[in-house]
Amino acid sequence: MSDKHPFHIAKSLEYGWDVLSKRWVALVLWTVILWIPHAMINTASVIFAIFAADHQAPWYLKVISVGVNIITFMLYTRVVLLCMDDDPAGIGDVLAGFKFLIPFTLASFFFFVGVLLGSIALIVPGIYLGLATGLYSFLIVDQFMGPIEALKRSFAITKGHLLQILFLYFVLCMVIFGGLICFVVGVIPASIVSTVALADVYRRLDKAYDAVDEGEDDEDRGTADDESEVDEEIAG
Image 1 (cartoon, rainbow, N blue to C red):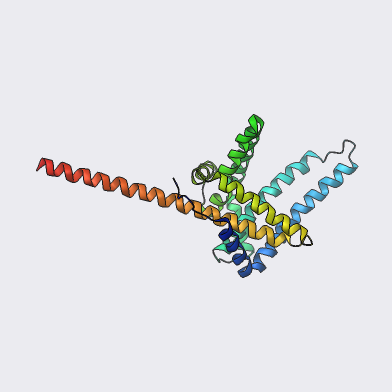
Image 2 (cartoon, helix red, strand yellow):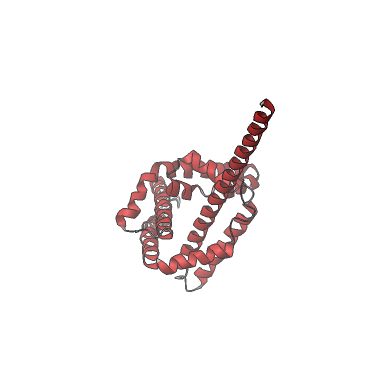
C-alpha cells in the first residue's frame, strides 16, 4: 500500500540535523528538562535497591517509573513534532500534550503486551510487532488518533518496509552510541537527531500510504466511469 522507497535514512538524518540546527535551544532545553524526573526516579530506585534486604526497589517506585517514562516519551514526541513544524515550543505548548495521556498510555500498554507475547512465542514475532506498530506515538500526538487506530495505522504504513525500518533503528543506535563516546554530552544532540529522523520517516511513510490509497481510489473511479460509459453506449 506504499511507494517502493518512501524514505532514505541518510536524508532523514540530514533533516534531523537541520531541525536541530534551527531549533537547538528548544530541543536541547526540553531534552534536559524531560530527562531530569526520569533520572531522579531511576536514581531513587537504585538507592532503594542497594539498601533493601532483597535488593529490590519498592513496587510503587516501579509504577512511578513506568508513568514517568510514558509521560516523558509523550511530551518529547510533542516537542519534536512542534519543532519540525517550526511551531512554538513553550511550556504551555508542550504541556498541552497531556491531552494525549490516556490514548498514549493505552497504546503503550497494548504495544508492550503485544511485543512481550510475541517475544515469548519465538522472539521473531515480537520484533515484527515492534517494528510494525512502533510508530504509534507519532500518530497519536501528530494526528490525534486513538490507541487502536494508531497501532493499526502504524501497522499499515510500515507494511513492506520492515527490513528498511530495522536497518534504520540499527543506524540510529549507532548514531546515539557515537554520541555517547563523544564525551557523553554528545548523546543529547545524537538522540535529538535520531528522534527527528524517525519522525521524518513516519511522516514520509504516512504520506506515501495515503498517496497510494488516493491513486487506487482514482483508478477505481476511472474504471467505474469507463464501465458506465460503455453501458450507456450499449443502452443507446
